Image 1 (tube, one colour):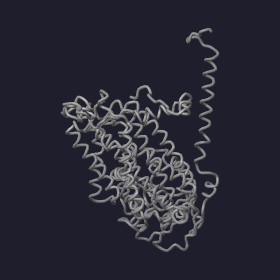
Image 2 (image 1 turned 90 degrees about the horizontal axis):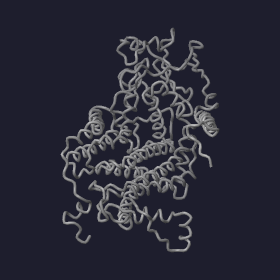
Image 3 (image 1 turned 180 degrees about the vertical axis):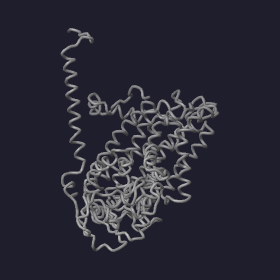
Image 4 (image 1 turned 120 degrees about the vertical axis):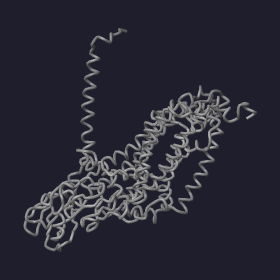
Length: 412
Length: 175
């Protein structure tokens, strides 16, 4: 999208540097003059928020690692030491723990926005798939970080999640032993999870670079779901997107700070303040809230192998979304039927999250099965057929027309 | 500068293929230690040696929990009623069919020795709970009977049997 750089370094040093490493020009063309559609709304600010959250998690995580001990006899106490003894340790840990929740919250909003406005459609398939890979990496990283605390929920989450692989016929048990480095979750498991929990955020950062790169090749989608056709349809990234992103980030940080300072344990589970005990399973095992929809899908299927397949499929299916949605119209604004199915999908996803926290019995199981069916039917039945049968509304001729009406710009 | 026809085989082609072949074998060989290091190490395996358990103090109807290879092992001293319950079941109606005799040692029917890990996703079931007087798993609701067989819930298999032998009437060795 961005043409030849118009960057003119002012200082002698920057001119000298630009001839040797044109990094100033890269930043200038990517984040200053980069053209963004003029009709972007606040749902487009969550990419920036996610980048910020990744930074928060890496910085607080590196600091926490200076005080944490990855050993089964010391891990829990070292976390309590961070909470009680380390200067501002309580703050750093609460920011890190609630930061994970905020990270997932922003990611889910970001994904729902992409689905509502059809941001995954041609030519943004690779951009979308990189996003699905980022989600998978986030899930793995968040899970392993939760285990490090080595409370009861940590230990039994590690046991249940690693046991998912025992469902694989034949080699399942061998794979689980290999993952554990022993005959049960133990010290080798904790050690390797610590190593990988430190590594994966940097892998995420690398994939984020690819994600942003892919974004800057194809350009942003927008609420109208049509490509910019002229200079009237776009505005420069700075100041327009910069200030919009920054404002929303500040609002998001207020919510974040409210959790950290007022209800830091609201999103956690009290049982994780009990040290891990390999001899006793807590009476109810619940994952962190951001995994609950997938957990509900696992539990709604009364067969171990099929349940595990459904769990992994519910994430993997997202990668095929660009081809499952057969409609040529991107934005739900111009797809009256799609819009209704989309909101039902949101209700099913959030509902599965609620059901994942309930005991797997009675009416909860029945509703879980209905929502799980809808979750998969949305991708495999509704979206492919809707593209054929839906009568879409007429698209505007241009982004500026969709914003300013058919009269065209009136001194915008 | 001479141009070489792509069809002709040159010494460079040979070097290219030979280097790639050696490189591929080398890369595969490098994976062996990188993957193998994650399996249980020597000390973990050594700590998994057999353990001997004295059964004398275990009262009728009592279930004790011991650890072997970091896994909880349930040792269940079954009462006459509990043995009968396990025997009076139509084996073919079970999700994972097994007779009570297959789950115990001949002459020691009062002793049930099973690995105390739910075959669903690895939680530890609670003893003397559920509808079948055996175990109930708090995680996802699997229920086991007095022979440790799965009767209800998402677990696919009966509780696994560890390798064990009776050294005398009141002593077993697990492992």
